[in-house]
Image: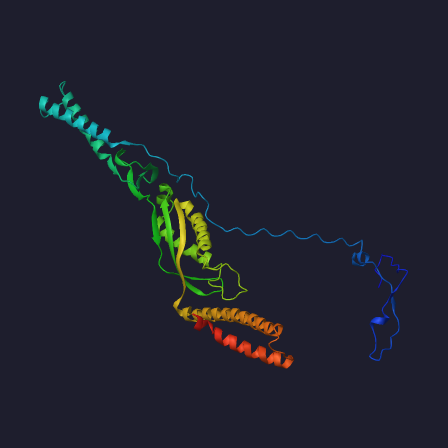
Amino acid sequence: MAFPGIPVRPYRDPVVLGPLFRDEGGEHRETITVPVVPAAMAAAPPASTPAPAPAPPAPPAARRTLPPVLDREFSERPARAGSGWWALLAAGSAGAGAAWLLTRYGIPRPALTKDAWPAAALAGCALVAALALAGLRRGHTGHAMVLTLFGRYRGTVRRTGLVWAAPIPRRTRVDVRLRHWRSEPLAVVDAEGTALHAVVLVVWRVKDTARALLSVDDHASYLREQVESTTARVLSGMPADSFGAEAGPETLRDTEAVGDALTRLLAAECRAVGIEVFSARPVRVEYAPEVAEAMQRRRIAAIDARHRDSVLTSVIDAVDDTVHRMSDRGLVSLDDYERKALVKDLTVAFYTARGTAAEAR
């Protein structure tokens, strides 16, 4: 065989293929000489055809999640607030001044005369006392107050105790304590399409009050919906159980790996609304009632098969050791037929003594 554009010159000694083909009678066929071509020259493509460059591997598709910040305006910042004890002191001083004016000048008359300043002073004392008392609030530990004025975010008050803030903005109290939530049984499927019921425990808190209150209608409901969504995404990537030795080791029974994947995905989805997720762990992952009985039978069959394999291996080792010991010590002298019969009898006896997987349990 010749290649276009490549000169082929046979070696000086041809390869004799005649002895490789013989008739049953021992007669040789006609000797055939074939020129040998070097392997590198035979495998090389024509010089005019360049080898195609390998295509670069496609980058793996990244999981799509929400951006860390949806709107720069919705970012928590401290509001202007002070200690409420100063407000109480101002209100008390204003009340004392008003009482002194009433005692000294009596009830002021509305007539505008040169002696009308007691009425103005009394009105000023009443206004100061009203503003001081109207802005007083109690700051509870583990709660924050979000201030909004005509729908615009004005800041967050995280102080505790007696706090004074401007009385005009609207105050909305937000719970910022560490909280946990246990879901109801969620209907999901595993990588093989088997119906499952999963219960997830989530430990979380509100980290950014502005995003939690203004970026979403109800951050608690949003968290519950995201738990259901991320649970379905994570659990659908692995099988629930590994029934055979050839299956992979990663299953949903590895709660540590499943919990880590669930925590990462849920934290990424909830970061945009100001929720910090510390952990999301599957408390219970079980088969749906309609498939639970069938999967239980499959699990028992797999356990029984593994038990039989281990028993058979140990029985074969025991039979081999017994036969070799008896032969080495000269207790028996067996031909092939007797050896096979002895091996058969010993195998049946040892295997029957070991029992099945159900009897072992």
